[in-house]
Image (cartoon, rainbow, N blue to C red; front, top):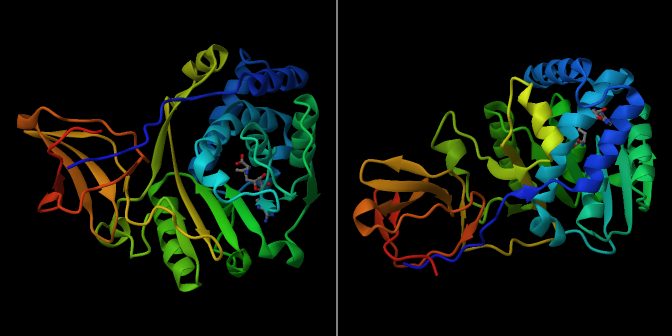
Length: 341
Ligand SMILES: C[S@@+](CC[C@H](N)C(=O)[O-])C[C@H]1O[C@@H](n2cnc3c(N)ncnc32)[C@H](O)[C@@H]1O
């Protein structure tokens, strides 16, 4: 069997953005080595882990600083890792709405990715978050065709909607979500939000969307239906600047690898990866074999490398793989018998 895959290395944090964050933290009087910054990050992390919403987080400078120092860089990396997916959807004539834009995480990522679009409407309920976004754009010398609104208006619903860590701030899926032509949704990788996103996937299919990623197919989700606890999530590896790593060392949590759940769906674009498989799990070592979960249909399947063949591979999670139709299948294992080409 032959597998072709696109390997992904660690994603490097963009230095100019790190320098801008550092300048901003200095203006708050909360540099990287300040204890107050560390405590604010810990308490904001606790708040996010408790699944509570807090649109007023921006009203307190120490939480603005904490978001900018820790959560903004991680979300930026999550968005940057979806470069190929974003580039296949966002075009020069695209009208984009970033719902819950916060400090402009998507807008800055789109600049770094050189995404060209016609217009970006940032919908953000908190004006201090908007101010922070504007000050980052100024500091980074970024000019984008952006307008800000405090709430979603009817004109904005028929466009490409971006939701990065913002849909989870709404208690229920809003009915207007289905008015968007294309949806790009990133959510925290927890069992609750991950499975909620997989349920939303089914509603989107019912509402005439085609799922573009991470799924390569439109069949029911195997992780949702064949397991009560698993959820689909991506893991990327990141390389952060040294001062950020020193700061992170003082925190109770580490993020050397970064997880998130995501879904891209559209009423106008088509899935270009139909027929391929997506590696959706990390390498698992078992007696006599190595396995990795792969998704290509409504069946839970694993690529498996038997030890005796000495051909085990570690495929970057999220990679697309091309599987021979004649691949040997034993139970839920697809046996890889030859090396990658
Ligand atoms: C966790 S932050 C995410 C910010 C940004 N999208 C990111 O990826 O870093 C969620 C943002 O959604 C905003 N928000 C929550 N509910 C909203 C609503 N109903 N309308 C507009 N913005 C909202 C919050 O103020 C906050 O800035």
